Image 1 (cartoon, helix red, strand yellow):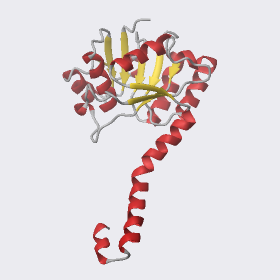
Image 2 (cartoon, one colour):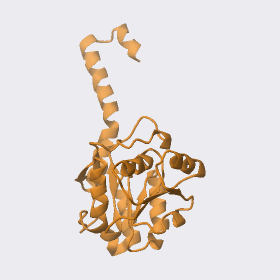
Image 3 (tube, one colour):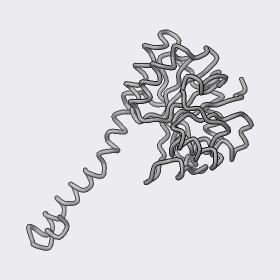
Image 4 (cartoon, helix red, strand yellow):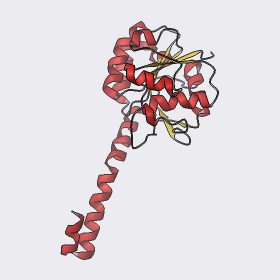
Length: 218
């Protein structure tokens, strides 16, 4: 099924970069953004979206794909709010950094049809700064786009497959992973800088002892 319209809810760094990336790769459909008025105005000026709508229930009208590019808490709320009202011909997907809770909520909303209605995803991409003004059409180039399938879901079928073909076109590398394993991996990655810092501090103490020079580093 061809994608004629995509709604991006949350046109910040990730959502905005996705919109720009689609346009750079010649996506011919319509891109609708949903956010605060000031953000939508900026997104339109930058060419991220073709139209803006502040009400999520209105913003999804006519879209084959709805991408939730908000913080995890808002993603869960939007699944609950939008899920029961979406057309069966619309795929809901997300970019949340934790997957087990999001997928669990989607399973409750879509019951036995989650595999056809929802695609859980997480692009491993970002920048030091947030906001649509920092959106980059090449943000996903070479980045992993992790997908955590629901039970029985073939992510390469139907609308999921069509959406992921566009994910590939914008330069991302698609990998499937179990939701619980994904969350463990991301938790480990988030703690990695602290682990490295602690290990380095211990190494310096082993090497130099408690010399005053080490106090310079805090």
